[in-house]
Length: 65
Image (cartoon, rainbow, N blue to C red; front, side):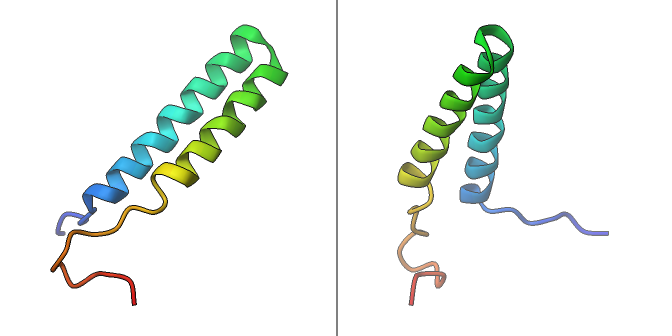
């Protein structure tokens, strides 16, 4: 069986989501549920604004149409 091919952008998105989840859970456990939910919301907004609009490199053939 071959290896699963995952792009750099997909790895970055997965790592950011996992790190954000860990930060939110840590804040929720340490400071309370309300703070954990607020942190999760801020991280979700940051994820959508900063990472969701990552374009592939020029000439890769996977650009937006």
